[in-house]
Amino acid sequence: MNPIASILNHYPVLVIDGALATELERRGYNLKDELWSAKVLLETPEAIKQLHYDYFKAGADCAITASYQATLEGFIKRGLSREQAVELVKKSVRLAIEARDEFWVDEKNRIGREKPFVAASVGPYGAYLADGSEYRGNYGLTEEQLIAFHRPRMKALIEAGAELLACETIPSPLEARALVKLLGEFPGVSAWISFSCKDEAHVCEEERLEVCIRQVEASPQVAAVGVNCTSPRFIPALIREAKKATSKPILVYPNSGETYDASKNDWDGHSAYSSFGEEAKVWYAAGARLIGGCCRTSPKDIQDIASWVRLPSQHENAA
Image (cartoon, rainbow, N blue to C red; front, side, top):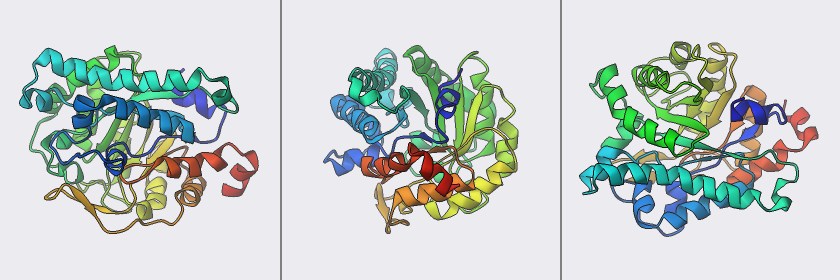
């Protein structure tokens, strides 16, 4: 059984963790670099492990690894050998597993919980470009070129023990199809496919979310589909779009509603919510079954979700 199904058999919502890179920045780490969070993976890996642990403590059922921008090409460009690059990608999984195991060994942490799992982030090709392309798409690459790019990282993540692949912030149907086709090379491995969206109906490369999901959801290896790193104000409508195309669990982990400015590697604007936990109740009522946060969210936001997810009376109220 895939870990998503295992948790949803016991709870109506699976709690995903929150931001990794922007939370590391909030904690004082400088990520203004083409490697983004992968810079901390290279330089201060213990900070990533601690953040994973903090999200588990906050109530997350799932940790997404620090491999979003950890690509072989990016590390080799920084001067590492291919072997060193592969080991760093694998390290992103091991750090999350170590944090989870240390959290779970304490019996107090098991009360009212299912064992959390580790989802290895497979960020889009645009993340490697480090120019905001994951919010535009239109890379000009073929499906085969995208498969060739993603293959070595996906292989390394699986070999390191990832329990699920989080194919996330995908801006285009082409890249989503490439990832699902590549997934077929690794039988028995499950993944979720999560798109970045520009409005209430379209992914960043203009196609309707409903159409994109229809193109990938038939794969038995796709365990859930949905949206991430998208403004919270679009989420209810996007859940309705997703429900038109699939009966699989729908996931949402939006950002804070601020806008990423690639020219200065920073975020502009203000949060689009006053309470992430209250917003999450709206997303649950709309049909989302995996809920968490992306850029600019925090362990407190995840705690706000978990605080009602595991209270049966709150499920009834939210629905």
